[in-house]
Length: 428
Image (tube, rainbow, N blue to C red; front, side, top):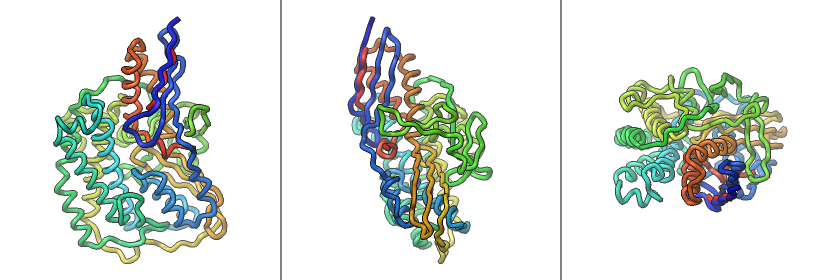
């Protein structure tokens, strides 16, 4: 009997800390454990007793890469409790605000995390030596996303401009004009990034997985919608817990999520697969010219889906800012009360669901937050099992470690967000 354990103790080029344990018996995988071992950060617990707008600032600290996602999901949940109805200007500006986060997050992942894997480099720094323009373009787009976030949030990291009911301030027309000009100037770079990702020599491996995301009838879903799946699910966000279940696994501090008992995928590939028809014609035409077809059930097409969403987010931000009109009431009034509310938006990495229970004065009695990475964890383990078996378990530990990292990084896991990651340990 051939027995081997492979341990990857530190997963490189991901946000957070984690590890992977693989057990091989008679050339078959008998265990695949993605270990998220960062200590629980207890965000849900220390939100208890906080006032509504304290929550908006606090949840932004859950993630330095996608703070807006946490702010918007929390704001929507609290507004539903307090029967608040932000006017159209707020809704539209929130969409532009969110576009900035998609742009900066996707750009970092494509160029600094996953891109080097598919180009055969150990790091973005090594890749930049041979492909400086690729990396420079990515960093320009990343910086642009941060500037767009700062336009509404006053800063790109842990923004402080959002509040329950809208924003603390409205950007000046002058600042909006400056931002718009930058977006228009750099739009061709977004098209180049899409072309570059489409040219990558990606592994060809189709799988059978369930996609889950928000769906809006009139727009590519970012900030609002119903929860849908590729297997026919179509529910309001309030009904999330009736269909999705979280469970604790002994090898992880992150909860595993399942849809009707099975793993599922959230994130850019799921969104493009289910909302492709709502993309602008210019993107569909470009994808057709590049011979890229969606829906795709090759997980490695996630990097192309991210490039699609960068292009889309820039086009959408341009559309919104071109029509910008200053508003002297960027927020609606809040009247706290005791009740239960739900919020769900599309973080760069996928569906982000919040549930809050409040006291009479609006302070938080109980909070529950389900981040994208914990929803993807079971799907990542399933993907690892399929990919490594097809790749060949006879490879040495170093090759198996690298192959495993490529699969995991492809999901752009945000490990810190998911704790409640590569050291690889292989047991042969």
